[in-house]
Image 1 (spheres, rainbow, N blue to C red):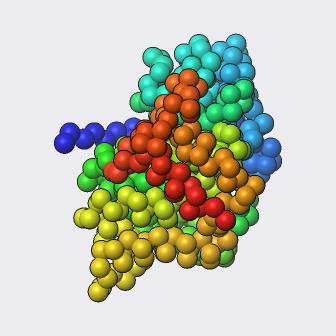
Image 2 (cartoon, rainbow, N blue to C red; image 1 turned 60 degrees about the horizontal axis):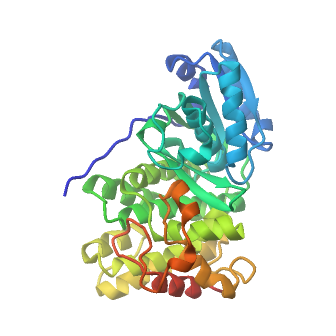
Length: 401
């Protein structure tokens, strides 16, 4: 099997690394920059320090601080037009996943002169995005090293993914100082998202020895430090989570994401379920479903999840992997089931059919008619094991509270 691995983003990591942002911006040829953030992050001391560093490097600054829970097509299109109008030549994102996805979308539409909706899907634009620097403030999405951006189309109630090699960020700064403003319990949400990235990359049909090594390393580091980072003020554990989330996205950026993300997508678009809840609740079930056809991958994943495997059968190890995730969730206050409000039982079948186009369909998803999907219709997904609509429905039903 032919495999490829591509990771062009420069990563600067460690305590104090945020001070390099002015130098990095100049090195990338930026002179007029849009700084993208949200109302909470934009008032933090580290955000102000970053702006000071940019100013001292002679960078002219514009700001957009209105990002919300999701990256929205309307924000992206408006700011993309602003960037073109004002001659801005770089985008710097300081925030969580929605901030980085918003900034990435702005950088894409600014150079491609078409709305974000038309840029969704795989490689649906021809021009390189504007130069980008990403500063994550959660140990979660890993969007700082990802070619993909996930956006919400408010008009059609869809979550859409767009991207390709032309939209990789140019640089990422991983400084644990940015995690200090995030309440630890809130930090559990992006951390679980990062864990799903590593696991789903490992369970992918297009995984390779390169992605497996990084994915397993990310899972082991995330799982080993997550309880401490969420339940105590441990700077070393938070930094370990930040690095692990970056590693996980490097893995899934090359091996792609699986059933958890495919099935969560319609819940997010049509039921407004926050992304980490969708993928996180599904994760134990996704592990059991896929490991059934990956006998050689069971033991390594179990060991990465801290399981003592001596004397366990393969089937027992698979169940232990799912149980280890549930045990972690209990310790960090993360749910294992959807509430009736999050996923009404009467809409489970609809959500299973709406998952058919998968995560990577982009704008093509808006033309899909769920009524055309039957029990045996396959979910478009690169996971190792194929999943039908009937199996997706059963998995969602098992997730109900």
